[in-house]
Image (cartoon, rainbow, N blue to C red; front, side):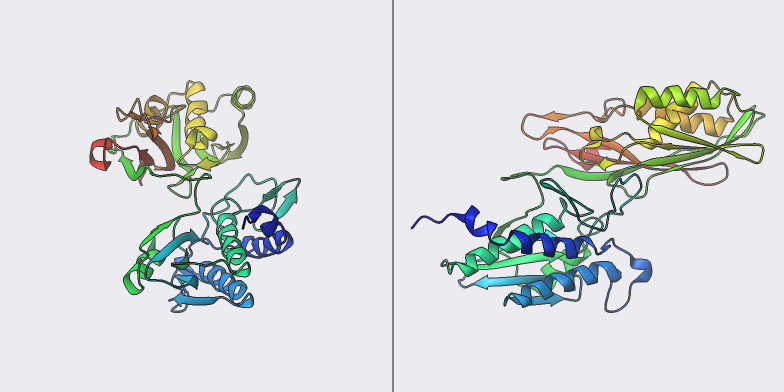
Length: 363
């Protein structure tokens, strides 16, 4: 008997949207600063997991909660286990949103909100696929475990505890990528560039601070730099022209004996950095255009950014470029910038490398 799965799923359209909206409203970013014994990853991830299980229990499914960091919804019977692995945690919302991040906003055929694409939306879609199968009373010759983690975006603590304490799937897939299937994933490695402190000398302008980025897997949306000493009188005009040419937005704020420059770019996931405008590298490029006589440390820091990292995502100037016929090019995304005259002077680069190399070779 032929089954029209699209028609069967369409009957749940309003329920799908309502349940997804409920999950999107939960800020489920990892928050160990507010962790408790009942919420080891913070209140948000635990709440998202509990909410997903309430949805499942409402619909009559059996659930298993593992220490409020992971768990499963299950159906079917058989010797083998088909694992469907999704996650309910999200990366920080960051800045630059044109809609409320923790509220599902429906416009046309799109739903906007943090997690709608990664991975609350796919996680709810997988749940309703399971519900359709169950409600149609289709026979299953395997146990199906819809497994939810709550730390995929950080350290995988939830799934690690799940795999350590529960029966593991025999086979499986993850609804956390492009449809219909991905059969491989690039390796991930973070490399931190640490600049050696250089001796100070008299300079017309001093870079006191430079900061951008909040997570290693997010292209930074905003970056700030504080300069003191001689500041060009045409700084705002230069910044305006730079913004016009690059799609950025720059604000200049006077401070004691100098200015703070804040540049806003466009965020993106570090796996596709070319889709963003990296605020850190673009701010360095803007300052470079000013032609300042900078202090040695500031000059060195900005030179590394502009010479090796700006306007490039394949790692060519870092001498790590590699392209695989199936998996495509390696990507190198500088995502966290930290500079102080007497403090850290670092740049964290997130590298996604295809088959044919490894983390040691890429570094």
